[in-house]
Amino acid sequence: MRGELEEIHKVKQRVELILEDSNKFINRLARYLLVGVFIFCLLCLFKIQVVEGAAWGTPAFVLGGMGVVITFFLLFKLSTVNLSDWQALFLLAGITIIFLGLWNYVYRTKPVSDYQVLLEGARDIVNGTFKSQAVKPSDYFRYYNFQIGYAYYLSVFMRVFGDRLLYFKIVEMVVITLTVLTLYKTLRLFSNRHVAFFGAGLFAFFPFIFIGAGIINNQHEGLLLEALAIYFVLKRRSWLNLLIAAICIAVAQVLRPTAVVVAMAILVALIIQAIQQKSRQRLGEAVLFLSCFWILGWAINQLFILSGIAPYGIKGGNPYYKFLIGLTGKGVSGKYTTSARKSQLYYDLKAYHFDYALYKDAAAEKLRNAFTHGIDIQEVMKRFTGFIGNVDNQYNLGGNQHFLDRHPLLISSLNFSGIVIYSSTVLGTFKRVLTEKRVTTRMSYLLPALVFGMFFFAYIFMETQARYRFEQYYVLFLLAVPTLYQWLVQVQKRTFDREISDHRI
Image (cartoon, rainbow, N blue to C red; front, side, top):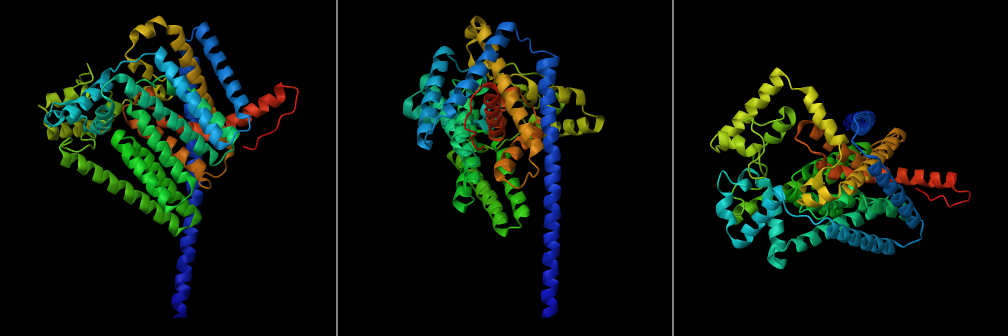
């Protein structure tokens, strides 16, 4: 009996040593990876925005730069006011909704491209004609079946409010405002009210967020649900909060399939914390989150199938397409997109008479050939550096070309101010990555860093555009805002000849 106890004790010691070594390895690897990732991001921004030049005219440079300075100054001064959390939330909500309303009044968007097709799909769901179309092999919602979830979401509002575009724009404004408030609440978990107010306010005035406020876009709803999931994971580690987070991510995946990346980041973060803390409870939390997320996702998919709205489910049915575009630049047929309904995937499927099994085999074979004969790394890196360093291009989907043609200076100024704020968050995060010695200790650092890193590496291999950076913007704010605020405190101390209170970060 005594020998058995000693053997058990030795096994426990070995397990603890393995866990300690694993934690050290994860810490070291994660830190090196994060340093490398953000050095790469800074180099991309420098190459595209400085070396190559983004054709910033002097007026746009001056107006955009002054806009950033004034925004930073006013938000910083507002953040120094002693407000309660409720007062801060109320003020942020008021400022954001009014500002978004004014922007929508100025930049009157119209549904174009995929967003027009999604609204048409929602209208068909309301009219009861959607089922007969979605079953056709050549229909948009057959080969892009993952878009059905968002079309159904739009149809719910259409049933209640009608199909006037104004109502959908109001919904988008409310969703973005709620995301701003969620960012404030999340920052409050590890920062004071001053820092949280500044960060949430800056996010509301971030051009790459508000410039698309009038565009019917699943990125808005997806980001809100992902932000809520991150908040509940960070708030307090309890079974209920993890369940809520799993529900948020499962629903987010219905609206925006890339939410699975955030789910993976949460799962990996929970496992890393279980190793770091040598905790069975933390491991159990990881199992709970994964189980709830998978079961809810499966159940929602089955409900769509049983309802007949999505006969083939809402899971992506063409898994190789995004990788083909990302790694080779074109699909199997070699034809390029001519409209939202006639995309590269449409022409690929048409080449195989919309036989999905044949297309999958052909796409898989082309991917194998690409890996066998070599991928054009130069083209892949050119695309990926553009994804990291280019101006966000979502304003092109506003459908108001007349406005863009009449006000090029305004758009250029907003783009310049957007790239300055984006670059500031990357630089602030890089500074934090250099100074944080341990990645796994604090969940408030680990989880946002994992989300950013996973999207970063996923998009190396997938088709990308600069407007796909929504989730990365959000987690950059979580990572960078404390550092940015600290810099502003130091600037004010050194610039103005008076003492100010040094807010605890």
